[in-house]
Length: 270
Image (tube, rainbow, N blue to C red; front, side):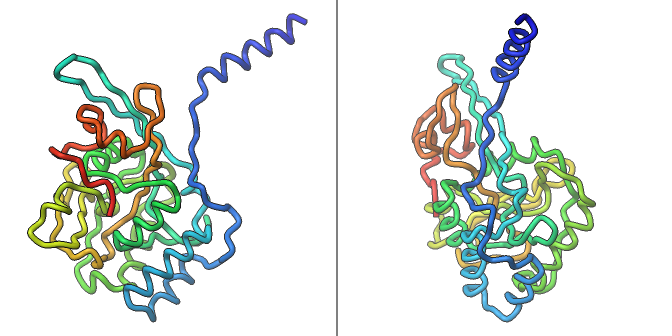
């Protein structure tokens, strides 16, 4: 009896320390079985709009490597300067950028923000802010030196080649990865630019921690090149022990500082 009681006690203690694990709501048995290589071979014949639609179809059909489905917790905190209270939050991010294929043959797929938003909505996710990209980089266990390319930047073949270069550099290292792409982000600048229909990009940190790409909205929102990456974040965020939708966090005058370092924080989607 004492042995049984001891086992139960150890089990209960272990469960108290358990952390909630979140997963992307995608089927692990994809209808499509295209590998990352097959995706790019077919996409070579496509214009950007066709390629975007092709990627959305594959991803929403569940054709993504399963290692992307297990989200990684990022813990952040800010001090309310008026009260001195420390506000804490945990949000959950993909360990790598949106990709197509299986665990043995997959490829990162740059997307327009329109396609990225469609996928994010379907998977109950959102796109990160500049602050979140910085926080993700700080928490990454795999940090690689950026590898810029300069010819045919928006071509499909360059996107494929860049993925292969990253994989050669990664050398099977596992875990939350950063320093390999510029993130497509949400930003105040999207609605405050002198030009409409913009995409905001940021990041691609060097090993020094400095980003190659400052926050930038110079491209039209249908532009995408090899350097862009889509990292999804789960909508539900644990703030001071309670679950909140990210939109409510962004609307709060104090709590929004957990997610954004911009002054307004009113752009929450594309």
